[in-house]
Amino acid sequence: MMFEYIGKTRSVPFLSRGILFAVVLALFGCGTHNSTTTTTTPPPQTLQPLANQPTDGAGLAFLLTDGSVMFQGKNLSDWSKLTPDEFGNYAKGTWSPVASLPAGYAPQYFASAVLANGRVVIVGGEYNNGNFVLTNQAAIYDPLADTWTPLAPPVGWDYIGDSPSAVLPNGQFLVGRKLDMQMAVLDPATLQWTAAGSADKSDFNAEEGWTLLPDGSLLTVDVKNAPNSERYISSIGTWISAGSTIVDLHLPGSGCLVYGGGCYNPPGEVGPAVLRPDGTVFATGAKSTAGPGHTAVYIPPTVPTGAGTWTAGPDFPNNDNAGDSFAVLLPSGNVLVEGNSGTLYEFDGQKFISGSQVAPGSSLLVLPSADVIVGGATVQISPAAGNPLASWSPAITTFPASVTRGATYSVSGTQFNGLSQAAGFGDENETATNYPLVRITNQATGHVFYARTHDHSTMAVATGGLIVSTNFDVPSGMETGASSLQVVANGIASVGVNITVN
Image (cartoon, rainbow, N blue to C red; front, top):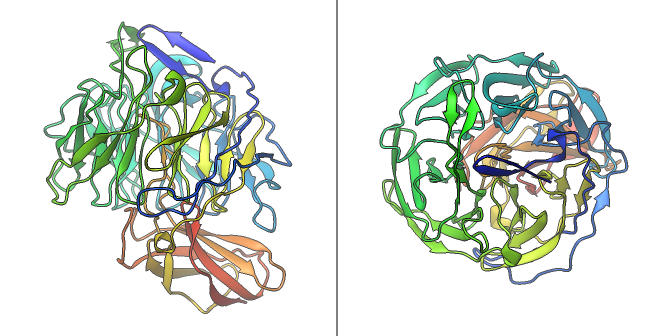
């Protein structure tokens, strides 16, 4: 359904008002890829409903570093977790409840991330308990203790709401205050906020999303000052121009939304922007006129302070658009975008391939199995289609040949964080998966175990030949004997290495 209020139209998922959506999806597959285009297109995939379903629906999803997936329930403060079966099959996985948010905090449309230490952080909320308030409440989830702990906001931030955010390559969590140009970084170790420089920002942070680039900068498509775009250089705390997007990607806003601090005049909406394996960013737009939403492709500069260049991409079919909607990078290199109509579109580097309908607002997430899971009242999963290039895979260089159950070890190699954040949603609901998972398969039984990863050496993307590392905890209950260990990032797995589990 569409929930309309003054100056803004928002696609509201089922959990915002307790409406149960039936989710139907048939993804169009993506074929063998070169650096920019799909060479073949397999037939549409068949979506499977999960054998088991959550008791309170499944909204926004986060991939935890132990391979499970945590979903927000329709009551907004409650959460549940999907764990794959013994063979790593998510379609046959089981659900279990996890801790609820602190009393009084039931947010919708917020800043969020899975941190390098494996915890989940959510900050703000455009709505809280169903009311438009731009809350400044926040909380952090510890999966080991199964607890949410309240998190104080940055000093002086009375209102946060639906703000842009990203985990920087150094692991710090950066948030932009919605109502102005202020920014703050959270240190995951101390849980303390520090003001971040935001010099030369063209406009305020409202309704803008951030895409992490391989050079560590953040790309944003301006909404208030469309069609301008900017890049944030965190090392100097400065924004620089990234040029014009050529086509207008934003939906103009109007009117006044009343909240505790006064009147908020929304500048409009924009769609998700996703970094692709070839280094370009595919940016999608909301509907700015009576026609379709536009798209644009960004080519980053070859020098750190360059602007880069933009070219116009394909318009959405059937006058559709992707203002405030989900998109994910498929392991094949194609970008799957959910239109505001609920139609799924796959961008193959040149054109859109239209797929089937989902309920508008259904969440999308790529799993370690390379499948796509779609949240809703009925959770469904699409088997993976298309193969990544071998050069996109993580590669293990140093690992323990023998491990003991319950102990912690380190594994090193290249491209452990994948080539992209691999997820987007306009300006909030950030569910990036640019961190390594460790999957151990017992060679005798074929049973799959995910070893919780934490304290990754970097949260950068597309790190190339740089040696990076992560720590992993061998599950205390896993099977012993000869096993294969893989590192998985964004649904792409490394070649396995042989280990012995004691």
